[in-house]
Length: 182
Image 1 (cartoon, one colour):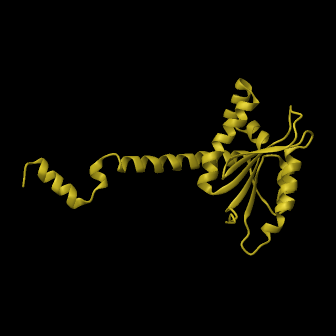
Image 2 (image 1 turned 30 degrees about the vertical axis):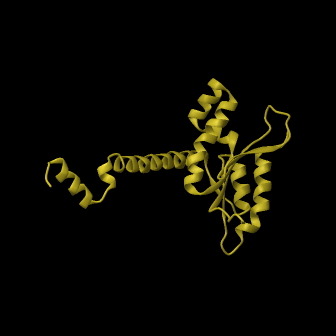
Image 3 (image 1 turned 90 degrees about the vertical axis):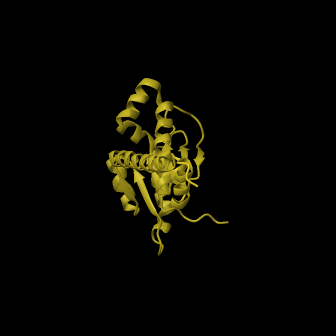
């Protein structure tokens, strides 16, 4: 079966976001870059699934001489590492150029790039992609997380008692039995 296009493809400039979100900077400075990278990935897991986005977090080959590769986290999220010497900006620009035909279809898929790099913002908008600042992405991730928690608490509170999961007539009969009525 052919997988349908997602509502949107979200390209995230990983190190740009790590440097922009205060708690990720704190993690980076305290526990290292690897810990901050995975904290960002964890933050984007629920957000991507809730939004139905195909999210791709791009990290350039900073401090590593590895070949490019990707790690698929789940159906909504993957992490991409560029080749040594290739920047995340270049990777994102090439991805925007390759995605351009999908933006011009009758039912276009949205392409969103999350970065606070001003030059990158102008470049991706030139390809027809949408731009989202690191701060805006942070606010949306927090907002989505709060919505998910509210939905989960509503589900838990309504299903907490057995009586809430049965119909009114059965509840009435149980009350009668509890009181010793025939």
